[in-house]
Image (cartoon, rainbow, N blue to C red; front, side, top):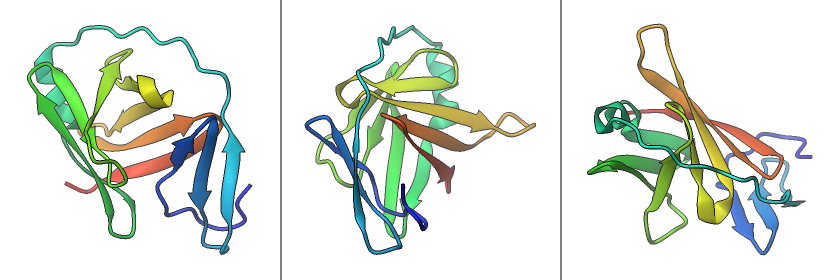
Length: 129
């Protein structure tokens, strides 16, 4: 795996996950078989906890918004927003990318970051706003 920090957004393409590293290399990781996900309904007020901006890397921000009873994410590398579908009160998935996000809260109940997982790749993303 990467020998230095990873500050780039991972990009899934045809069963592979591509990302750059501070060691000057671009890595390609084969994605595991898709996990079976089951979306649940959450009280829309819970979704407000996750709304905000999350720093993916230098100059790369993912914005999470609530649109009705859905949580949507605008990723810098994509033109359209993606829906974050809840599996539990803190775990969401992106069906098209077979990716998972686990939102982490502090002792006061505020979201501080999320852990992004996709095909064996894991990245912690801090909430900035």
